[in-house]
Amino acid sequence: MNAELAESGTAKRVLRLAYTNGSGKLAVIGDPVAHSLSPRIQNALLEHLGLDYIYLALKIPPSATREWVKAARLLDFAGFNATMPHKTALVPLMDTLSGDAARCRAVNTVVLRKGRLEGHNTDGEGFLRALGDAGVEVRGRNAVLLGAGGGARAVALKLAACGARRIAVCCRTPRQGELLRELDSRIEAHAWTPASLRENLRHCDVLINGTPLGMRGVGETFADLDFLDALPASSVVCDLIYSPLRTELLRAAAQRGHTAINGLGMLIHQAILALELFTATPIDAERAAPVAERALAGVLE
Ligand code: NAP
Image (cartoon, rainbow, N blue to C red):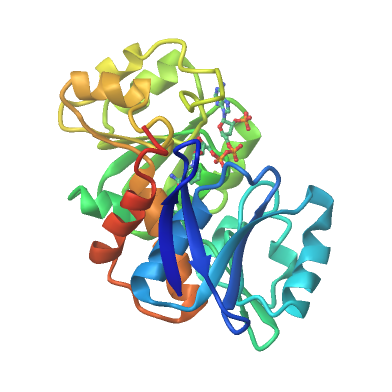
C-alpha cells in the first residue's frame, strides 16, 4: 500500500491511500464515528508495516449491529473495531470470545476468519501496556478507579487479572460498581462521595479516571480536585482521556508531584493489539507506537 501526505487548500493533512481490489478491508464501526482516530492510527500503521489493507470509519446506527455483521461477512472484511454503541451488542453475535471480551462482556475488536467471528477486547491490555511503558507495576498494588463504564470495566478486570491487590471502584451509580464487584473478588464497589474517595485514596498506588469528566467537548469536569491531597506522594495518576492530552486532573496531579499518565498510550496500544489480531502479524510496539503518535500530531493537544 502506498500512502502520500498532501496539503489541501485548508492546510488540512490528508492521507491518500493507494489500494487494490485485493486489499484487505478493515473498519471501525460506531455512531457517531466521524471523530474516531482509529483510521488515522491504523492506516499509518498499515503503511509503516507494508500491509495491504484499507481501514475505514463506518457509521452504523445502534439498531443495525446484526445487519452490519452480516454485511461484514458478505463484503469479506478481515475484521473491524467497534466503538459506542456496539461494544455490548456484538457479544452474542460472536462465534468465539477471547477471555478479556468474555470477562468484560464487551467487544472492541472483531476478527473474521473463514466466515467465523472472533470477538476480542484490547482496552484492558492496552491500558496495561501504557502503564508498563511508564514503568508502573500493578502486581500487589492498590488501585482506585473513578467510574464503572466500558473503559473502566476493561481496566478494572485487567488489573485484577494481573495481580493488583485491591481495586476500589468509586462510582455514582452503585449498581454498575456492584456488577463489576461480582466479577472479581479483588474489586470493591464504593459510592462516589468525598468521604469514601478520601478514605480509598489514602492507600492508593494508582488512581485512574474512567469517567469523561475533563474530556474535551463534554463540558463537565470535576467539581474540585482536593481529593488528590489524600494520595500518598508516590501514587501514579492516570486518565483514560486523551483529548485533551493534559486534563485538569493530570495537571493538578503533576503539580502535586505525582507521575501523570494520559489515555494516549492506551489508545495506541489497543490499536496495535487489534491490528496484530486482524493481520495475524506480530507488531513491535516499541517501533509502531511512535508511528501512531506521529499520525496524531496536530490532531490532539
Ligand atoms: P461510559 O461507558 O459511558 O462510562 C462512563 C462512566 O463515567 C460511567 O460509569 C458513568 O457513570 C461515569 N460518569 C459520567 N459522568 C459522570 C459524572 N459527572 N460524575 C461521575 N461519574 C460520571 O464511557 P467509556 O467508554 O468508559 O469512556 C469513559 C472515558 O474513558 C471517555 O473519556 C473515553 O474517551 C475514555 N476512554 C479512553 C480509552 C483509551 O483508549 N484511552 C478507551 C476507552 C475509554 P453513570 O453510569 O452513573 O453514568
